[in-house]
Length: 449
Ligand SMILES: Nc1ncnc2c1ncn2[C@@H]1O[C@H](COP(=O)(O)OP(=O)(O)OP(=O)(O)O)[C@@H](O)[C@H]1O
Ligand SMILES: [Mg+2]
Image (cartoon, rainbow, N blue to C red; front, side, top):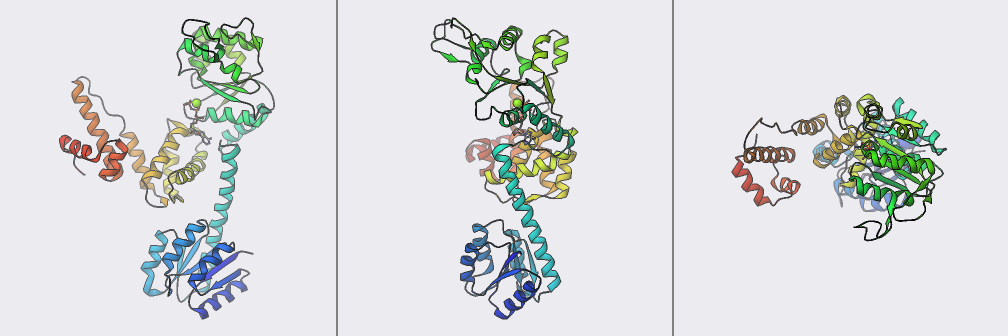
């Protein structure tokens, strides 16, 4: 039975509301002294609150803020006399769920309560879901393609088979790799990642296989290789397509023998490591052109998991956007509730060349700059616009000085627009002092509008 807290200084009014709600199978706690209300609210669990806008001793807005601070997820419905509708509207802006007017219409009140309770259950469900996901499994999706990937992950997690994960940049390849590790018997053992593109050849070799102090000039101390570090667990070789041929050969030998040759050690070491690799390159094509070893390719892709680009699974966009919005609401301590349907439509339509990473970055930007708790289509539009402006057109030839100035101008202007010409906020974003920003605005002749 849902439980409702009704707060109003008018005792007769309270009694009639309580009777109505009890008759409709709600449990009701009625409090006529606003000073007591906060305590009652804290001590018991309510599903919804009815709160009078105007009361002697403490006004409804102050109380609203206090209750929200205590338990932000409980929806609060304001009750307003006709003379204080503006206050009720203010309450909505502060995050009250809705308001009803006195004299109360029973039907309207009951519908509002029902809606509020629905919203609450949606929230708690989602909260549980998010908590679960955060802990064990941050990879989200509800498209058929993602469901198939979840199935594959569960399946390969049971084995030791090598997995090659392919897909465009930002599609979630690393998350897939982590999910496989987490769901496998190796969970609890190390998950070691090595990005083969970020490190030049010689260094990569040392990173991968390790060396003893003095094994070569410059080896001033022992280096534990990733293979050894991952022993018992999983080694994730990211951007495997960027590994140079000489190292590809050495990796192949290691995989065939299950032994690592640590540079400077007399005997190879046995290791038990599960290999997951990933690339956004077209490996079959590289094999054909002789840039990637065919034998290594076949060894690595015992199972291949292809993560499709976001534009081919638009069903995931709403779920991901909402998840990221909640995430950043927490990070930036903002009350962000949801996107409007129009805003979600815009997000669904965009092509997302940077895939989920791009979506996540965009939602972060929106979360930082939006002041309302609901994200409107125009918030999304603005963020997407700024994105498309990001490429500064490069004039075919011209002095560097001019190009730099054009860039600076464009860059600063974009940030000014983003903040609505708030100087301090823009200066913070650019990492310069506000007086320096003022000087640049003057020098570049930047103007609003
Ligand atoms: N399905 C998903 N659910 C939740 N978050 C996701 C999902 N896919 C990607 N992300 C997020 O998007 C970002 C990019 O994901 P990830 O690093 O796994 O992509 P990637 O495919 O490895 O990209 P790259 O090829 O550029 O290395 C990360 O912040 C990740 O948490
Ligand atoms: Mg990656």
